[in-house]
Image 1 (cartoon, each protein chain N blue to C red):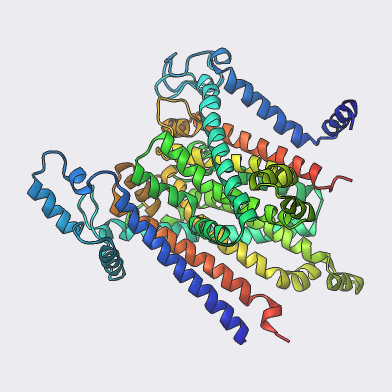
Image 2 (cartoon, rainbow over the protein chains, first blue to last red):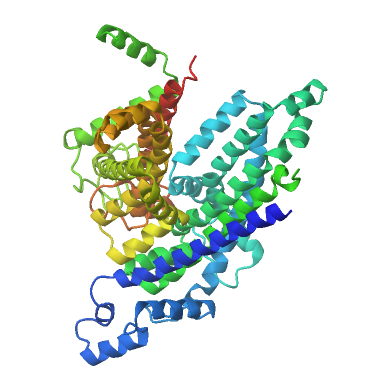
Length: 318
Length: 281
């Protein structure tokens, strides 16, 4: 057990260090803005006093390392700063949006993970059959397509022609849970399509890889059915790579969400990020990037720890 | 091997190519011709307004017209020149950067390897799209900025691969011998290393092109890449998105073009890997 604890602790320390470096880079982004930022925000007509006051308000007159710790400290205390474009506090801008984005990502994950595992196991079970080949070609196509192609095909068929779902995911705080599920069905399916392929292929590969090992051959010689061999003998040992790829794809989901939110005009964090990039609203971009980066790093960390914990060789050291 | 034998072998390889590879090569060839000879092939000009806006597919204009009445087919053909051209240049930049740094890390080792690898670790620790959006806020959005940002971010993957395969080759006897002969660093890289790692790198180039191409399309679709009125597949989807609510499939045409080219390159790379991996016999 001590060995596992040590490995997990090492990964967590590495994860924390990565978080630190990334936060530093995101902070430094504002330093590299060309010209004097205060001047740019206030415009050409601002008096030097105004500019100086604004610089003081932003803390631009202090050295960078002090500003970094103030910035980080404020964020950890929940003070996210103000948007340059609208001058509104960022926490009110993003409050509902973070929830919306997480809701969509979770919804997509709940559809994608079980479907991908089922298809992956079936493809491994009926390896080299027509079913397997079709699933493989479909997966390759899905991986190669941009997110918006899947989104617009779904909108074209299910929203415009059949009218089953709304083409635009317009949502307010008062939208009920069931309505959300209906409105977000197409965005969630889009995300499922783009993330499922990789998970499915990895599940298939992990299981096929194991099927060649001697103990599986033994099980087969005992006369067990193929379904039982895969579910009871192969699957537990394939868990480590599968957990890994699931977590990595959930992390990818967080990114895929950006494009999908723009397609469906869904009021989430991704759409805010894209809008803020075109307005060059640096404080909002920093916070949004930080949230995405932290989520991504944490999910990857989870993947690492999950695959350590699910490795039977580490759980039962000799 | 005599030239005639090489020719025969090449012919045999092509004759045994699976349908997916033929499909891929055909699509790539069509895109190449469309891109190179766009002004000759396209029925109308890149930004020429030729009819009423939002005409449907299959009328006088094969793919209809866009939101202000330009011919979609012509714009898709010019898009083959703009989008694919820019993606190709970006891939070459990303590839050269990753190749040179990867080989340096593999040959020099020690601190050079440590330094480069840690930088790459950081660049790969968060998603490329998020990184790109952060940097584009800093620099402002323009084609040059986008090309440079994507080239740097995608070069990290090339670096990883080059370093890994380079290290495997770098410890082999003939490299050791060349070092003892007193050959210079670049001579060793060019004459001993590159020929031995060319195959995985060639496949990597194809895959990298796909990622770069999708990345550029995504940024252009978000309005942060190639800007209108330049015909570009990603921004065409964005411009025509509203037409879909009138029941027109117009934005699907450029989006499908993106997918078609990416799938085709993937098919060809798959076949190439299969041919060179020794799995074939």
